[in-house]
Length: 190
Image 1 (tube, rainbow, N blue to C red):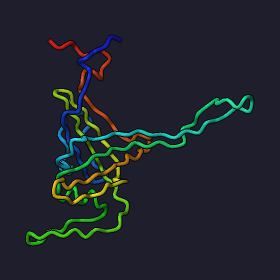
Image 2 (image 1 turned 60 degrees about the horizontal axis):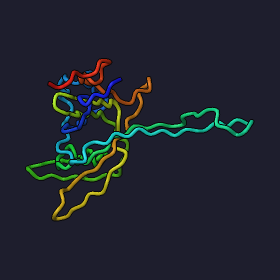
Image 3 (image 1 turned 90 degrees about the horizontal axis):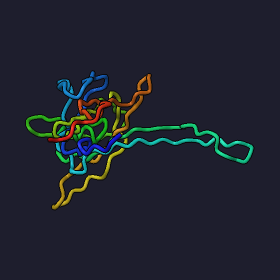
Image 4 (image 1 turned 45 degrees about the vertical axis):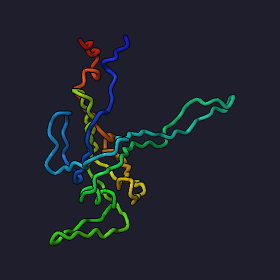
């Protein structure tokens, strides 16, 4: 396959979304997100990091002690990002199981000990006309970073989302109309 500079992508912009469990997300990269899904807001310039990890166990042969097979013993897909917009959506996402209650313009967030809080998540990753949409039907914030309150720093909320498998073991879907994803290479710019 020849090299194709037109297939080099940069995540120039995008968005992160959260919705209630069992949300029926879009099945392509162009359909609007459902009304029940909220845009998380501004994300730091670190963007969104996808991580796929797995652990394997080596099976050694008695004869010579050579590895004859590796068995995947665990796997995990996570997405992490830092929200830099303070909102009800972000506060409730960061503080699992807690709710912001506003009465007469005054809000309170009673922070509870974190418990299970599975939700729907999605991401749009955009590079000009190239658009990748990632849909996580069943995910949960499983790690949070420190919040720093300092005069020369934005108040930021770092979260890591773990994608959980469906019955068919699918943890996420990626959709795109990017020609680089198809069998044929993208046409040269001209």
